[in-house]
Image (tube, rainbow, N blue to C red):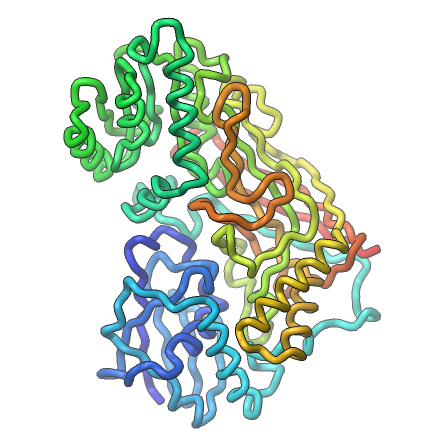
Length: 509
């Protein structure tokens, strides 16, 4: 077998995590191409479900198979190898005409995984096959150390698209903006907060000058404010392409006399007048990763008439929550076949509904920034903050039941499903992070990417960010402690990307 497969990603998914794909792409290739139409000219194209991958590349990857070894390479760096037998070689098929707009479900992919793993089990030893249950490699109680070091560090732009050539500022494509606008857990609440703020003043909406920071290609919130009666709206957009599209959107909406699109970074722009309030949906999956701190700090100093009033900011407060988490595929893919350290700290990014990630304790606050008091916000810069989590035995049990049902639905045998659910449920892969927004000054209008306060799964365009903090999952049990030092460097310069570091240990009781 000598096959080169190029994986392409729909435009609407670009900008999501790239290197997170590396340890799991081999499985997805085998699972998703099993039984498909024949190889054409030794090259093909296919797509895969982002919910299954829990990390989608921002550019193409190549898979090369030769001498009965399927090797995945990312930027010439070998990630994993899988020996193939004759039967499995015949199953590796793909179709270069596969429609990139269609997806195969996570469930179907896992079913094919179950079929393929059965084929490989007879010929591939458990020491090299990533398809064997991780419990076969798990340490015994006698082998467990009292303390296990865990660590990860990354920059906000790692694995994401950047607006500038120096890779300093996170940017988005049209599909990502559409996902934001279409997020039912986000957009209606912003609309409510904007209309409420416009109607709260004696002079009425027409007396209000509004600033929309990061208006995007649809100028959505700017147009919404104009529709609600705002007298003037300044809509700032750093991306040249997005600003151009925003002008078209404003013209089509008939608000050219109300909305002025201002192109450039807000920190480099001077407005002709100060504004009454600002809308700034520039919040990342780690709240500060899109430059919110530096942007709001500058706007606080220069743009608002009364910047110290919470009601003059939408959102008025942004937060990041954190909790230790287990991750299914981190358990499935073990050394020596796969080396998670090659991610170099770059986190895996999950759909917030993805059951492949399960929290192990109650969430804790790691970032908390009040826009009206941004210079004094307690967690505006979290240097050397220590968090202590206690692993919740009840969560472990609930997680194992959820994972077992998921594996069983996908046609894994009862015994294998039990082993995999137990292994995953009793393991820690890293510290999961996600954002929460409080929109109005009274903090009654809230936007949660995961359910609050327990961090449960729910639909959101934001992602759950999971830095993998150990080469292999760390075995845990109820009552164990996870002590983590948080060192987030969030600069005031919007063109210097925030950097994040988590360093700590699992203390077994």
